[in-house]
Image 1: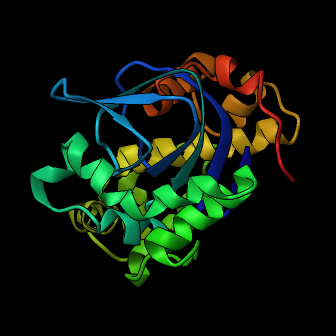
Image 2: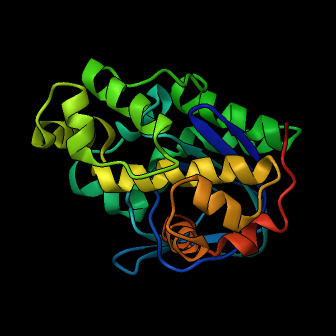
Length: 241
């Protein structure tokens, strides 16, 4: 697993997940075996690649398969570029996810898994460019959120700090990131917790330092975002530095 500004990349076994949705934009490129996706409407499709927008409900079935998964932060330029591939109701449809990832399928032929991820992103959006969102007040609110993740973060307080009303700031989160503020905050806390685990913290330590109530809270959010418990994923992770 590689964790860097704007982007989290995982390469390895696929397995099976329940229905879940990400705060990030997810790109999946299958490198070996067979992977079936399911959308909220029960449609199932075997795919070689898929681009899944934020908050799109899906499940994964790929025992024995391997793939590269890239999770792009919704407040980074790359994430916003990929999110713009979808409009209206098609964002929830499995067929649209496979069609949007069509240019990335050739990347599965790259010699290494790292190159698969890099070539996939380049094919879709010209490569990872973790430049942040445009509205200056939203940018300040996001930066402030990052500095406060160890404790409570309230939309009202952020809005006051950037001279906006809470409703206007909440609208900017939804308009520019495609996420409500609470969902964005859960994703930001989850990323921080993963950074802390990479640095050697236990799940309990990471949960408290990232602002979760306890490790059970972290587990619920991780399951919401990835369809799996963090103990299942993190115990088999090798971090790239």
